[in-house]
Image 1 (cartoon, protein in one colour):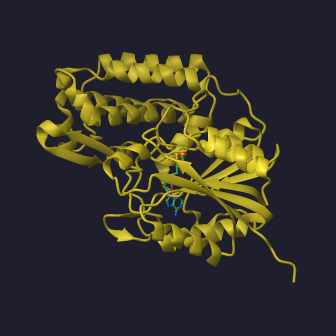
Image 2 (cartoon, rainbow, N blue to C red):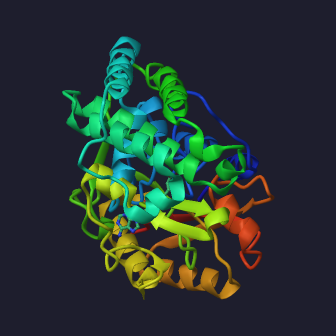
Length: 375
Ligand SMILES: C[S@@+](CC[C@H](N)C(=O)[O-])C[C@H]1O[C@@H](n2cnc3c(N)ncnc32)[C@H](O)[C@@H]1O
């Protein structure tokens, strides 16, 4: 059981506030944790050197906090882009190496004709305009075909995806003459911010975090080996674009989901049947969540805890989660509410809440324990 002190500590940290520093805010992965709470939970539930797992790793928040607190970490995600962001957030690169890379990109683009290879499709181009599309295409080509090390390529890919996402947002077209604005300066600014963040990470860490691309249904981790699991699965009935970029252009009456990320990374669309997800084309949420929880139960050490952070639109779905938790034999110790005002606990969850008032006005942290009863 948790002590009253521990519970009140968690409640205190459950109220939304933001923490930046290191690489925490270099990419706003959809529905990401704010880092202060994972950090506090890790301190409560583990000691230095312990093994932590996040089966729904997303943008790598848990991995980064585990690394900074000297814990071992292993994370899984089915989305290659999630693994990419997580690696970039936890890999130190020197300022000199990054500046050199950026200078090469900027020099090359000046004298370059548009490459034949296209990373944007014709509707993306129509929405973004000729100049911006050409620049994105050139930057993508340079990043992919340069002699950069893999970690530099990953770094610049995240910067380019971030900038493309910003340009795709509805508010970008409210800028005067937006179609004639060059995005190179936006890209340079983003890279400079990311250079400050990545070069501030510790040069060498005792336990470099491990991020695995793949489903968490069958994690290749030995049974009873993990000290603590901290995770947040996707939201039920919230169709989040984990791997696609939303391009919104009111003036063109177009909103489209661009496949730019897959084209840039050379990856495939996510396997819907494995994904814990509800959206167009299928509903595998509950069956897949049960499989993920079963996998988590298997790898957790006896008498250790799993903290799961999520929220629902309907009370009955919260009851369904509790039934699933019990079915998997976890003991539910506590449910701690995270109040969600407009200043939402998880950054990009806010947009869904503003749009969808049917969503419950709170998320919760479910604290589960793997209790093995002695026979
Ligand atoms: C809400 S996000 C996690 C956000 C994360 N807590 C953060 O701070 O960035 C949920 C993640 O679960 C991943 N996912 C969904 N189904 C999965 C599965 N079966 N196995 C592994 N990852 C899965 C999605 O790709 C997505 O990245």
